[in-house]
Image (tube, rainbow, N blue to C red; front, side):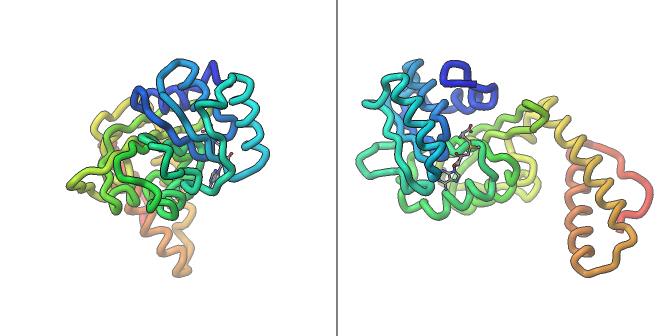
Length: 240
Ligand code: SAM
């Protein structure tokens, strides 16, 4: 992958950045996303934020190599601290980090958001707590994508602030848009998850400690949701 040939994952992220956006790509690493979008003329300017020096330097090299220094500001900053008042940012992407990390970055930096930016998020796991944060902060999920690449399931969540937002616990768990569309990639992901969770639950069957009991109850709830969503039959055998 490079700035010319984005991975399928980043292509899908790119497709949700509004045309002409002023993009802040936080955790940009090589800055592949903003560089590719600017080379295509799809956005008007970008900030590439990085908290670590090695990826920051990689981003600086990509930007210089493509002669985009006038349009992309590469900044060493923790999360949304990369945003400055004069940037006029209209879209923020946070990709390739755990969902909890993305949630924490949004929570710690929310005072820097003006509420009109589109958020394009690609968590590596931890989608449920991230959706919970979006709900708690008045964001509506406009679109979701799921894809499998290099044996990983990736989800993309696109959100904007809205007046009234309501999601059920199952919608936060599966993703409201993904659940509505039920794509083959989505159903495959949850078939695999169901097998894994059933195995884990069976492994806990004889354990007694209180912590395990809590884990077992959590797993039972998740398995129930997945079975309900897939229309799968519950397996016989110990469930509790
Ligand atoms: N966004 C690119 C992508 O999706 O391909 C790069 C993903 S890379 C796996 C995650 C990057 O996020 C790393 O370069 C890491 O340094 C950066 N990162 C992690 N926490 C961060 C934070 N709080 N602020 C800025 N960058 C952060």
